[in-house]
Amino acid sequence: MESLASNKIIKLSKSCISQSEKEAVMTVLDAEFLGMGQNVEEFEKSLTTLFGRNAVCVSTGTAALQLALQAIGIGSGDEVLVQSLTYVASFQAISATGAKPVACDIDPDRFCIDLLDAEKRITPNTKAIMPVHYCGGVGVLSEVYSFAKIHGLRVVEDAAHAFGSEYKGQKVGSFGDIACFSFDGIKNITSGEGGCVVSNDEKVIEKIRDARLLGVEKDTEKRYAGERSWDFDVTSQGWRYHMSNIMAAIGVVQLSNFQIAADKRCNLAKHYVKRLSDCPELKLIPLNYDEVVPHIFVIELCGVITRDNVRKALNSKNVQTGIHYKPNHWLTYYKDEAIRPLVVTDSIFEKLLTLPLHADLSFSDVDTVCDNLLAEIS
Ligand SMILES: *Cc1c(COP(=O)(O)O)cnc(C)c1O
Image (cartoon, rainbow, N blue to C red; front, side):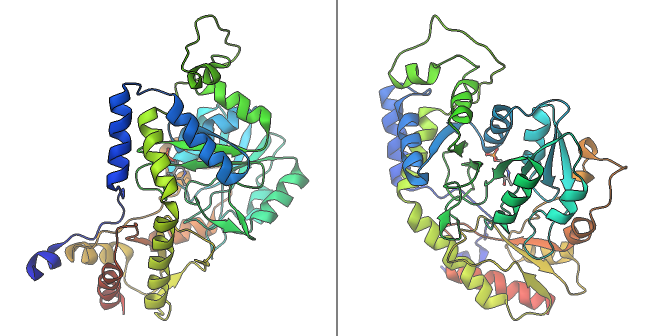
């Protein structure tokens, strides 16, 4: 009915789940083996095939980042370069290792780490750089790798937004040092919660396979064989960060249907671009949606109207919006009065607005969002 349709809330994001995921979960429940076993092995094998290098599944994207950092020896006294404009997960993963996240500025177009700024923040303690693939775009990732090589740093990519994205014809995660993905409920694919680390560094993968299971050596192999470890050794700090069969069962289905969801996200983003690119009151991030699978659709408001008023107006029209993200160096835990200012990040935050994007959105939903937005700002 028309009256109902117009009252529909257009959600910023949501999980998109079909009958197949429900059936896959029921199969695991029926088998009564809910913990980490063969479904996780199957999901890891599919991911390993997809990326052409080893993937190891964990409980969240944050855990993936933390374990990746620990696997390359990052800990107390070390510093990791990371853009301030990211989800607090990136920062928490770094500080969880005992290391210090060093907030860096971003380039004003793609909102990825500004290497000139990052270079000025290098100290003898700097051990790694964590580029964040904001919205799904990777910025100038090849330059991040050259930068890392010059300065002797490891690279841990926060690819939480970039599952399925490509860079120079290669899938993100299929090249480079270490890439970490998130499968939380609203990411490009989900396993309920979950995440994975992808790398061709066998030592890193081996360490994470143990570290996610409390450091119990070779426990992964036992579990995949349907056995348990009774007589084992532990030689390092581990965590309870493994993935469950329930999660993996959802992930396997999502992965096999990924192309449909990815095409949907790309086409919705292209529709936004078509509707909004001529509007002088806003700026779009110049991403190529033939290679980027967008996790979120962020615009920068550049007219006189404030972001929070636009949000209120859209909300009153049943259009949800978001803010990605409050800069981490503004948070009490990560505040550092002594640091050089982050000029771009500090000025851009109040202009950022995230529009609805998920695989169950329709083109007419995008039109509704754009009609309301344009009416408000132009
Ligand atoms: C979602 C996200 C993470 C963490 O993933 P979780 O699975 O939620 O722990 C890390 N970084 C960024 C930029 C994210 O958006």
